[in-house]
Structures are given as C-alpha cells and as structure tokens.
Image 1 (cartoon, rainbow, N blue to C red):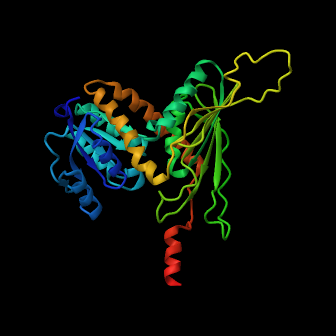
Image 2 (cartoon, rainbow, N blue to C red):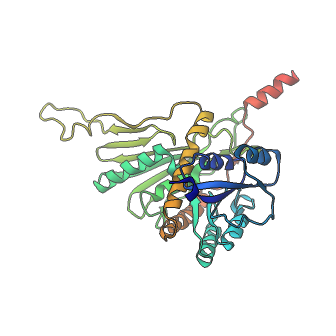
Image 3 (tube, one colour):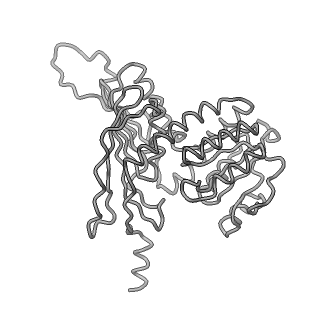
Length: 357
C-alpha cells in the first residue's frame, strides 16, 4: 500500500498508547499517525516529539482529516475519561479502536453512536492478537471441529482476566455461560507473604457445552496495578487424545498426548498425535524486550484488519461478540469479588531501603 493511501490516525494516551504509536510507525497498518492526544505531561510531549507529530491538548478540536482514533485511556469502568473521548470521536464520524476493558453499558452506547454517525467501533482485547494466542486458538478450533475438545482451563492475573474471557469467546458462546457455585472468599494475606498469588477458581459451561475452569490471581498492588503480576494468560484445552497448552501469552503452544501404555498388539492410530510437540515456540527475551518487539506487532495486526474492513459492517459481528464478553465478565467478576490489595516487594523498594541504610 502506497503511504499516500494511509488514512490519518490519532492516538490518545501516552502510557500503553506508546505501543500504538510504535505500531503505527511500523508503516504496515494502512494508517499514518498525525497527532497524539494527552494531558500535556512530560511523557506525552516526549512521545509526540519521538513520533514527530503535534500534541493535541484536551478539548482541542479533532483533526478534520482524521479517519481513526486509537483511545488508550482508562475507560469509565476504571475511573478514566477514555469513554468520553471515544464518544467525542464517534460523534465526529471518526472510527475508533478502544483499549479494553469497558463496561457493557459503555460498549453498547459506543456501538449505537457509531451506527448513528456512520463510524465503526472496535474494542481491542489485545491478547487475542498475540501470535502464540492466535496459534493456540487456531489449533483449538481444529480440535473442536474434530469433536475431541472436552474442557478448557484458564489461568490469569486479575488484570488480564477480561482478556481471558475474550479467549473463551473464541471457542464457544459466552452469552450462554453458566457458572457453578461462586468461588470461596479470598483469604487475608499472611504476614510476610505479600508477594504470593491468591487464586480463586470458577467453573462452568459454555454455550457449546464444553466445561470451563478459570483460575484468577486476585492479588493486586494498588500503587501500580499493572506491575508484577504472577502471570498473564495461560490455557489448557483437554481433549480425548491429549492436551493443547498455551504456556504463556507469548508461547510456547504445546501438544501433550494423553498417556497411553503400549500393549504391543498394535501401533497408535495416529503416531503424530501420540507424540509431544511444540506447535508454536516461545518468544525469547526478557519482558521489556517482548513489549518493544512483539506487542506493537499485535496491535498492528488489528489495525490492518480495521483498515481492510473499511466501509463494511464486519465490525458489528465483532462488537456483538464483545457485548457478550462484557456480559460474561460482569457475571464472572461478580462471582470473583474484589481483588486482594497488597504491597508487593520490588527492586525499587529494595533500592529505597538500601539508600536509607
């Protein structure tokens, strides 16, 4: 695609929004960055200079030629102004990609506004665009089509649990999710164990009939809720022939055959199915390097989809699935209850102690 054909795009938010800026600078999305919206702090101004685009102050008129707005500011669900920015853009007829999570009522309002003003609205649940998760979902669907899938077990941090529900929606209808009895209460944090996980488990059944389990680490540091989770996202699809495992949101994806003691009378019907295999490798490198190299590409893959669907109504199918995800998340979060707040140990804390000493 010629750069002249790239549609103008603005990004709101400079924290996680930096990854959207990096995605747009890849020059493969079909969009070109023309402005960065934010409060005007140092982080925002530095990022605008890095991307060589103007800073858009709060309340400043939206660029007249903008075709897409990426809103990476906390939504009303999390006490932020992100959903206000979304509605302002939609009323101007600008397509919107909004970073998750949002409340079901907000999402429904955004979809209505988009239809009224001839715009499109995409909720970005992000993790389903990571290459390892894409590979896991693709193979899981194949196993489902073969009739072999029986149970899905998910692990996540509380921060990523919404994305875990989204992963469920790729494998069955979450609109008809039925939960079993509520999980037991989160225990109080024992003295000296503030860094430990506090898992709660829910179980239930998807609309497809497949049983599911969801284990969520409810521990959260209120000083920096995005920092130091014990894990992001992990999944295991238990099948008749074995288990498909997503060890981490960044891979690997493994096939673990069901143990079978050979009796010497015949060979396995499918020798390939009877072998351990790595179907998708783990992304090598530290987490910081993964953020810089892998996450912008995942965002770019969604932006390319948005550009390819320009002028169509495919976004409504995605919006309906996400309305179902929001409804299921309300049900799940209500059963999980509030996270357990704790002060985690960190390298920064250790440095502070050392300086005092």
